[in-house]
Length: 240
Image (cartoon, rainbow, N blue to C red; front, side, top):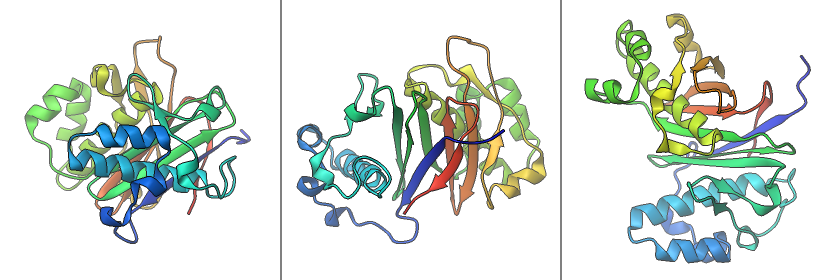
């Protein structure tokens, strides 16, 4: 099948650590973003918000979108009531998604169609049994039990990240039960392939009110990155 649509993504902080002190809010944030940033009470939240917007705008001004070479502060990335980011100019023409975790931030844009996208970035770490029982189906828990470390930590992190990416593509976030989505296991040997390239991940969703998602995951150092989009196929392109 010929692929015409493209998902563009960017990762900041991987090659060179970003100092939050170097990010100037009045140079990065549009008027509405700046108002929201000022209302935030906790510095950690303010830093993450600013870093996420910086990363997303690095992507959007890279040269292929309508915002090419614009000043970051000249436009706003807003948020829906349930938290999903959006641009007025992208309404009914695509979507944008942002994620940040432990000094890295990722953003993805799906432009030129009415499909939706979700990106999620997670630190690979050991999750305890209660976490798995609370957020995963019985089948998912069994798929993790069949693995030994470090594969188990990678796989559990990937499943968690994949669920978040799909929920973002649905524009819902963690407001619905993560067990609504069941991540299908991959052969043990393919877990190592995640460190080389994107691997497609299959899902099972019983609730037909949500659109089906194409889902990919990969490992970047000590992190997992996942992408979900509500179309059958798209080329994944990294910018910057």
